[in-house]
Length: 193
Image (cartoon, rainbow, N blue to C red):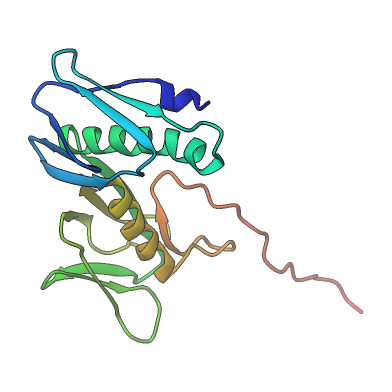
């Protein structure tokens, strides 16, 4: 049995959880999210106690055991998203690299021959703190925020994929808390032959 799945999810004040068939709807001060649940997982919403409990009806089936803890984690993420929200801080390193927001798209100049545009999904907001880099030491900074953890992580990963950080100078797009393992470049021998 999943240890994660056994824990009930606490519903904070201001958040409403409803169930109709297999669909769970969570609404709160920041918005509303829906989830279609796996059919063999039983979900019990106790509004008076402020808890959501998850039960595995067929624990001998492997897929049910996998979906037991996953369902609980997805519901907990939805509740956190509509009450507090999620954010991912990102940075761009590299001389002359920059980004701007234009007509619902993020446009990146990151050392490629043409600018790269990525449409911002519905429900995601991008806040640009520093639009352009200053040399190789001062990065461009931006923050991606939203209530859907899965959509936010997927968009951030797609943005990072445009120009992943390279190991020699660290140029590229990275998460703010990401550590880049650096490699030593070529060493030129200064000897006479």
